[in-house]
Length: 264
Image (cartoon, rainbow, N blue to C red; front, side, top):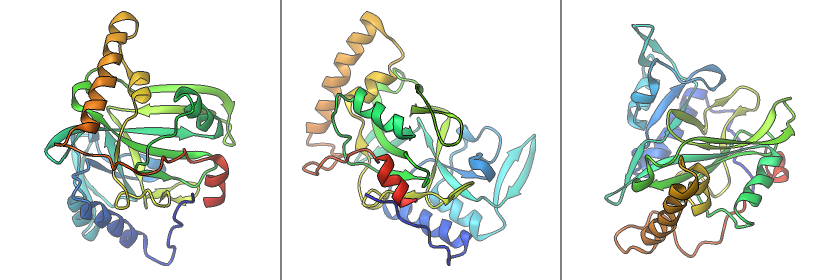
């Protein structure tokens, strides 16, 4: 598996517009936020002001996006866009919520294998910065668990190539994940994992073990919630009324450090 290389001959603004057009083509109303330098969201209270892909194309085509900054409206030309996690997404008439699993380094790759009991991740939308061992996967959380889970970070105890501790992060409310082909401060740009772009595959339901790791409550009440998670996800997967995941596809192994290193 490798990640798609950025097309350096295309102007940055046009590359971003083309990336947003790919999102529009999926008919997914993804909640987006414009991004400035160093992956920073643009504007105050950006978590409460999601943009659509169409709105961001209009902003890129003009003088920039209008956002409130310190009680003033400013117009800024974004360098990219991110997906706001923890917000809702309607698919085939059913409401789900978006989360991102952030694999930050080779040790985080091994942590996925440990926590899942060796079970491969389902095929889903995935993207990377090109840095060794880094990858993010998007998943859908069933609506009934939106208030039962929270963001969670698991430190692996390993120091990465940037001198920082590697970790596995379950990204939920009030966070964002920068999407391709947005600018990355060290590698140039984000890119989709081959065969896993937003318009190449569907966002899968989160496996049970991911939801269980994100549970707010632990102990006896948490165990009861865990049991409902298993039953609820199974019911959604087998329901004839909703099918947000493609059945019959081979499992997608997590982006291995070697694969991502060769892709970068």
